[in-house]
Image (cartoon, rainbow, N blue to C red; front, side, top):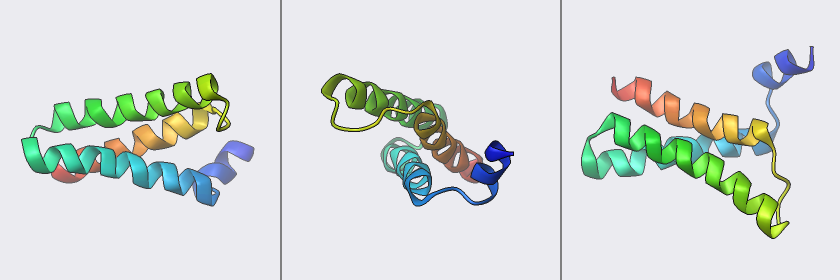
Length: 81
């Protein structure tokens, strides 16, 4: 039930990750027009951000945050497809 709630009405933090993933896709795409490269960049950014949070202990690393960032990149990917 909690997963459905996160999908239907995600917290603001998750929406920020979704938007960041979309931007991490869109900016490289504007320069390269390469969907695969841009998607790879957004996936890498989402995973790297959570590793940095864990290493520096400045944030709270969460797998779900990385997944929302990746989802934002996927949204961009399918929009330009």
